[in-house]
Image 1 (spheres, rainbow, N blue to C red):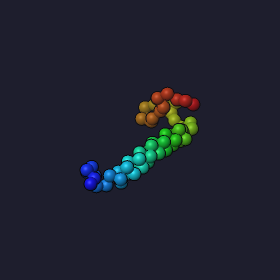
Image 2 (cartoon, rainbow, N blue to C red; image 1 turned 90 degrees about the vertical axis):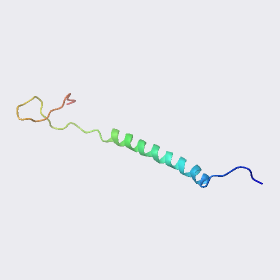
Image 3 (cartoon, helix red, strand yellow; image 1 turned 30 degrees about the vertical axis):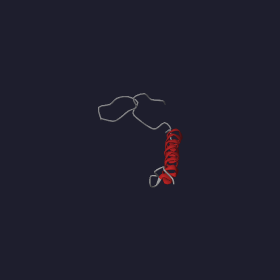
Image 4 (tube, helix red, strand yellow; image 1 turned 120 degrees about the horizontal axis):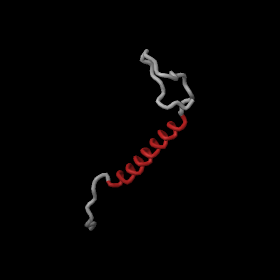
Amino acid sequence: MNMRARLPGGRLAWILVPVGLVVFAGANAHLVYIAFKSQPECVDHLKVADKGGGFRAAKSAC
């Protein structure tokens, strides 16, 4: 007689947890990839402050 109590869905958990971790890691890797891939080029912006309320870059790379 088997004395160990088995929880329902125990085998399913051993499948779903690793799959969930792989999906989580893949989603994070995708976000990092997109963050590096989508670096914007120089865009037009105000070079000096004006009174018109326009925005300018805090530290321009151009």
